[in-house]
Length: 188
Image (cartoon, rainbow, N blue to C red; front, side, top):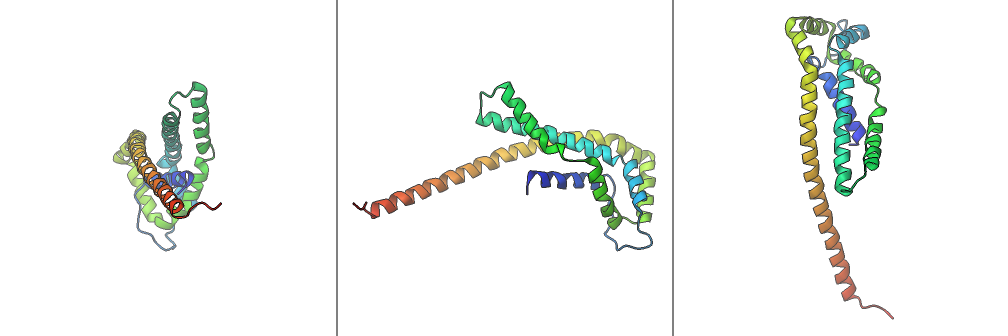
């Protein structure tokens, strides 16, 4: 999976977490309208969550890119680090929160009925729902930081293992070439 498709998948996961998900249902007279879904997404501040998530992902990508570059170039100059940061930032410049919201409206319509949305909107209008909405930015930010740390530590380990395996494969290939060359004397 590419970085961009992974990011898009993560964004859709976050958007789906802003409300309780129901069982998939066939379209019916109780199918929510686009306006009802948009009202729900506005109430749950989904667009703000997408913006926040993109910013958090960009920050984590920037940190990871800098660390990766510094591993390869330990004496990197501030100018080089700035270029790495700019390159990292371009990945997220193409993502539009509004485009993401437009893309998920039909998904909500598929999975949540009009009555589901009415109940969910009632919850988010309640004091407990308002508390969830108030605390969600902090929860998301802290979750992104924790996930970034885990991801970076796992990637370091995975990259080391891959490099070790590739080095072993190179040594094996070289040993086979050396062995084959010894068996076949050079022709004059």
